[in-house]
Length: 86
Image 1 (cartoon, rainbow, N blue to C red):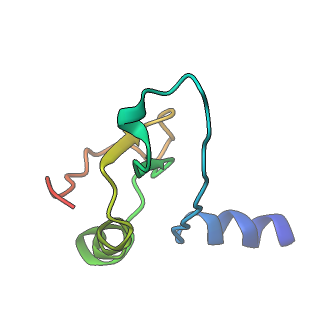
Image 2 (image 1 turned 30 degrees about the horizontal axis):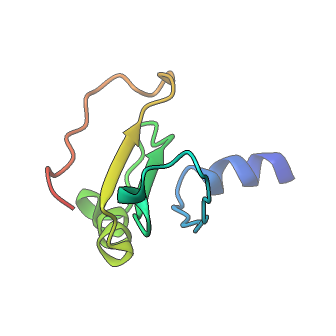
């Protein structure tokens, strides 16, 4: 039961995690850079036209947005169009 609730919840929520990365191997151009890593959407919607997701991205003010599509799920039968700008 708990696992089923978690699966449903994780498919309808969006989370923001802030992580600071320090590495001598990064160019100085990345100092203070904000990178939004968006993944595992699996054809889910976060608000009408994904406005919840887009608002979260706007508030985060990223310099770069990386959209990662990890693997198709059985529900990914249609191509969903996302707005071109956050």
